[in-house]
Image 1 (cartoon, one colour):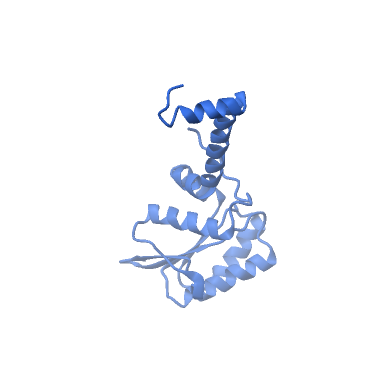
Image 2: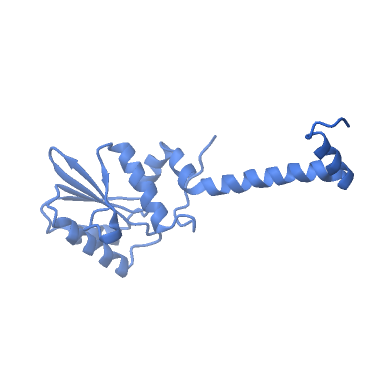
Length: 180
């Protein structure tokens, strides 16, 4: 089965679905990764990776389009909170390949932090998701597969009943053990 490229702006990919799917992707890439439940605030950590060399933090943002001023402020707040955990690295995972002005903004926003910061964008996500095709099937396509299964079953039922009520009675009789 060929995998189509994910349309990250698809309405089925809510911020929650995006975070769940990308967190599992990161766990597949780094089995020691830990998802942080953000129900009480995640402290700037959607996923953390405790390594012997220190803590790496992944911030997952489902933004598509461009990195607008409000989005930039969100990222900057997340980075500031993440810095409180003294990480050795911080990764912004967002399905956007940065424009030149976004690269300049990101470099300026991260320059005063003593740890490595990088932007893992659309190409990074697409490349890794392509190697884990089960993730979009599970998180995005699962409900549409169920709808197709139900429609196929409905078509079968309609085909069985094409002969009307006598066909339905005959069909019912063949299941109760009486001869036809």
